[in-house]
Length: 43
Image (cartoon, rainbow, N blue to C red; front, side, top):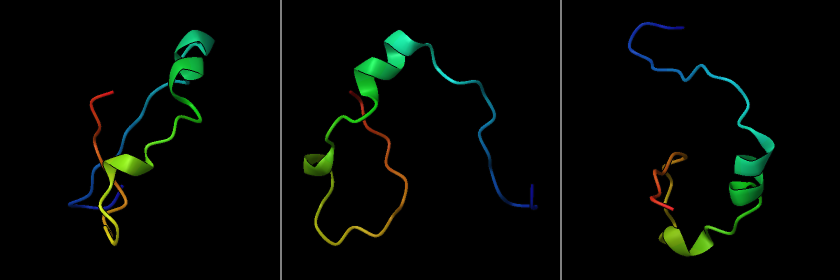
């Protein structure tokens, strides 16, 4: 890790959680032209 940077360390979510969120469409949560690669969404 480089100084001044953050990282997430964890484990793969259980299958029942992944089924709920993986592949879900979130395009309507972002404004067109938004350049920030990270977005926190309360789903």
